[in-house]
Amino acid sequence: MKNLKIGSKVYHFMQMSRVGTIVRVERVPMPFMTTGGSMSGLTKIIVKFDDDTEEAFSPEDLMRADI
Image 1 (cartoon, rainbow, N blue to C red):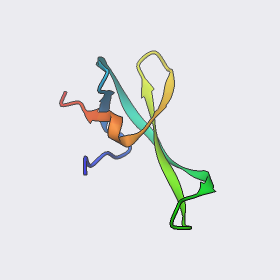
Image 2: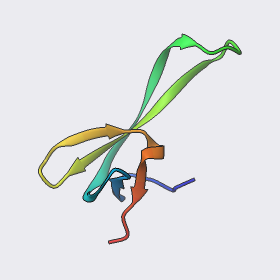
Image 3: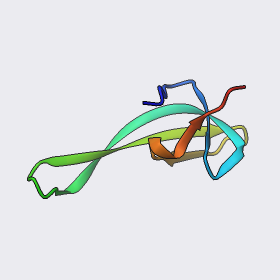
Image 4: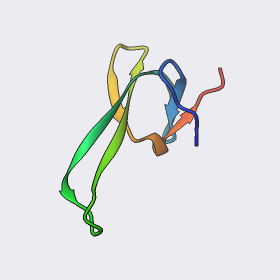
């Protein structure tokens, strides 16, 4: 587990020079059932960058920035 939480400085692994701050963590429900029959959901992390833009990322795409 990466220990990502609100207020943490992070960057997307494909854009290492663009560091932002986590502002929200959202659960997005899936509109379909999985093979086992249980409903599953996705977690999206909303990151705010210095230019006041916000983007949603999957937790596995983010890395902690040690600034």
